[in-house]
Image 1: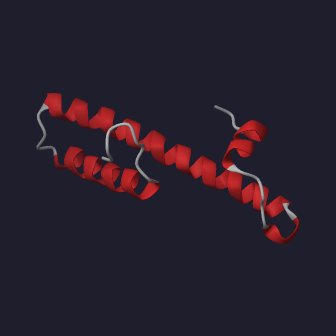
Image 2: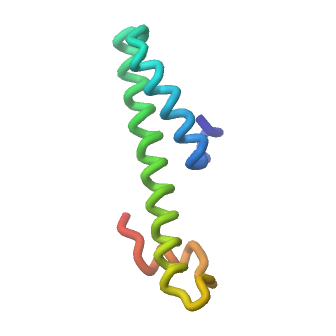
Image 3: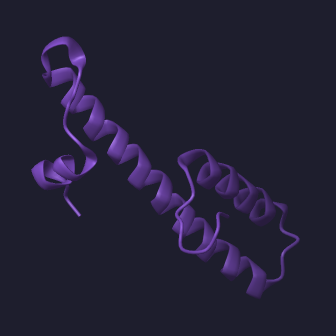
Length: 84
């Protein structure tokens, strides 16, 4: 995963999630490691979901703007419709 305190990018999280899934599917991990891997996978899955939601919101804003160009900052986007 990424440096502690900094969330990974979508691509980093997806790659990590794929690695976790492969390890769990192999059936070779002991129970304690499997539980840890599952927890890590859930966190990575949440990062991916969050990044996809952010991208979806940005696309929606762009589609509503004349010419498809948004001058809205990320902070303004958070104020206008973030459901977290």
